[in-house]
Image 1 (cartoon, rainbow, N blue to C red):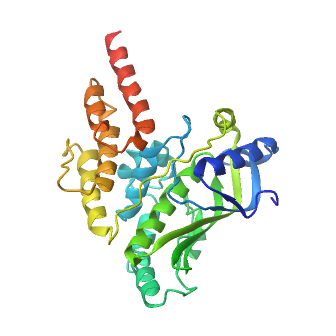
Image 2 (image 1 turned 90 degrees about the horizontal axis):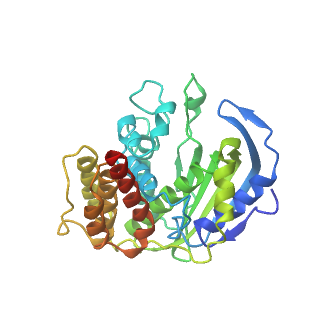
Image 3 (image 1 turned 135 degrees about the vertical axis):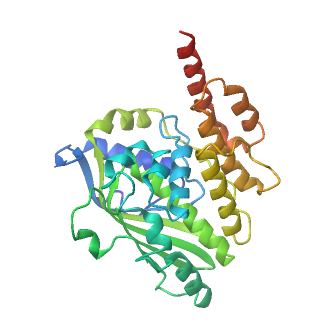
Length: 330
């Protein structure tokens, strides 16, 4: 679609607004096993500020599911139980009810049971910063052999260092504009920043290219609501990731994630994590608490110790607990 191709946007909300407005205008005449959709073919765009990776809108403020999915990737996991805690719909994509064939984590960090692509690219870029070979492959030729409920939508991730900044180029064969696109931009720009910190350089731009970007007819109401909320003039930037190798902190955060999800951890020790990673651990804890009654005061206390940018995501969780309390009192 020529009118959107190669446009630059400052925030995720800028992208979503442009994409939803265009997809809502188009005919819903593409049919597949997931439903009827409108479609943009061959779309490319650039996010100039990768830290503006979270939506400020009421309907798309999904910090918890995006964070959960990112940590699923970083853990190198394909376990359904892990990701289902954050995104229940994944159960429909499992072939065996236990794992996800197309999970990105094993492909990023243990491709074909032996290749840590992320680490290999880190070494390559360290040795030759101007290389054009720094490409991670997610879609594999073997994905078309046999039948699977879901295979990777992402084909490749390329890193390019130019003007001493790390740019990322993601190529996708298919992208669900409403559910998938916000999650993909969050996860990939976080990977971009992790790589930038590993290399000791600054973030550049994030570039996204997709063969088929689509909106299903069942998502029309929500997409229309998003557009109706009005233009998000101010982006919501996450704080810069702390300088230095982030992997020790990521490992600590993954321990918190597993402990919180399984109920073994109920508090976040501020002495164990940098403020940046502590905020993310507290988001995970708040998400867990929001499924229990009478936790609203604890959630508010935790929120008071966090970066204020996360308030927009936490407030709906407090409302969720209040509804649970009201239902219990009926």
